[in-house]
Amino acid sequence: MLVALVGLVGVVLVWSGATLGSDATALARVAVQPFGGTLVRARAFGPNGGAIPLLVRGGRLTPRVRLAPGERISVEVVIRRPGWLAWALGTTRRERLTLRAPVARPSERWLTVSAGSVVRVRFDQPVSAVAEGTSGQLAFRPLSSARRSIALGRRAAAGSVELAAAARSWERLGAPVVISWFPPARSPVLVSSPAPGARLSPAAPIRLTFSKPLATVLGSARPKLSPHTRGRWQQPDSHTLVFVPSGLGAGLATHLRVQLPRAVAMVGPSLRGLRTIRRLEWTLPPGSLLRLQQLLAQAGYLPLDWQPFGPPVARTPSAELQAAVEAPRGRFGWRYPNNPAELRALWSAGQPNAITRGAVMMFEDSHGLAVDGLAGVRVWQTLLADAIAGKRRASGYSYVYVHSSVPQSLTLWHNGHTVLNSPGNTGVPAAPTQLGTFPVFEHIAVGTMSGTNPDGSRYHDPGIRYISYFNGGDAIHAFNRASFGTPQSLGCVELPLSSAAKVWPYTPIGTLVTIEN
Image (cartoon, rainbow, N blue to C red):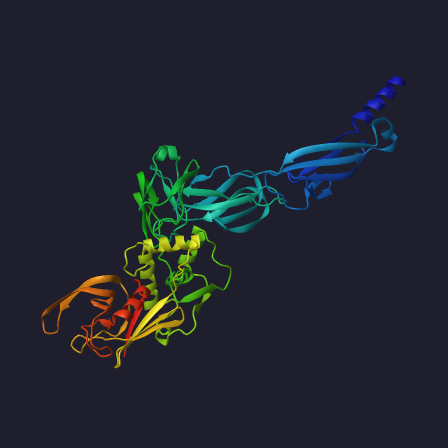
């Protein structure tokens, strides 16, 4: 009888337990033996201690919210024992488990795929959801059931794609992983992103992925960029090099070349067959004329202001470079009241005009650049650097217009006000002053003016004061005449000394001069 009783107690103890462990589909699973009692509470906590709501069904504990792959989770369950057993073993039993949400990883990231075959990616465990695409533009692909391999379909002979996956249906997608595939070849095969010849943003990285490890293909050597571009090569994995530009990158409208240390194979432009290469080339897009005008306005070189319709462009290299290529929408407005009609007629947003050219020349001169009125690489880099630094010209805006009809006169306008009206002389009929609008290109306090008279003789006049050249040999300057207001010069705009002295400080390089009837 005693032996039977002892045996019964042993059976009860053996069959009154409970276990808490991981599960193939749920977060965890609790198993309560026949005499173990009843599950009365199940809780889960994230790494910061926050509660994770659970669905309990059939002993499986499934999160009601999506968890990140690899997230550390603590699980606790409470089991109430039967009353007849509670007096001996206690009313409740607690089980605790710490685990991590599973992470599904591709079994191989660099694939060899024969032409025309389906690109298939295998994982180290079944996945319940995937998304594929390019950086920042992944498209979700629903799966009817968990599986270990995903078919990406028939693709180009070589290429790369970003793939994000979740091992469980209650997980968020994991960090994207780049998958690359290459055709069978004896030589190392290269996949470049962006492809050579494709559009390359000045701040965009260049990603070179090889079918074989870098140590085998390049050793310790690294590709070289031309022209020299600020930035550095990074190695995110054993097969890949990424050049990440810094600052303003290679520059707008630049022809960029990458020279490889050794020849490799690459799929040809027709996407069929392999060719051997050692150099890759891209042309970076030019800056937008509209954005050039916006930046010149913001920097104080135009008689207009500009305001964006949306948030302002962030003062970072990447944001400014993006805006330089794709100008944001906004509105121009005149900075000053009482703008001369002649000046207003010159302006057109997004179109080449004299106001923009003069502003570029003024910007070039004030920054020690070659003055040609063209927004080249140096102008854009300097203008973007000023925009990032928030620099603004504070000396205002001047404009000069000359009436060539008798009585001839010059008007100097600055910051919304007429500073000076003065009689002046333009060219005689044999050497007329050309009508039109021209930017000042040379600014000299005292100089010698020489040339050819209409009769073929030469003139040489030293000591000319307050010279502002605006069109070839034509300039605004002081000259000693008995009278002013009629054509008397050889194409220049002559002023009395006192008037020329007042005009000259207002006519730096880039100032517009309009000659009208």
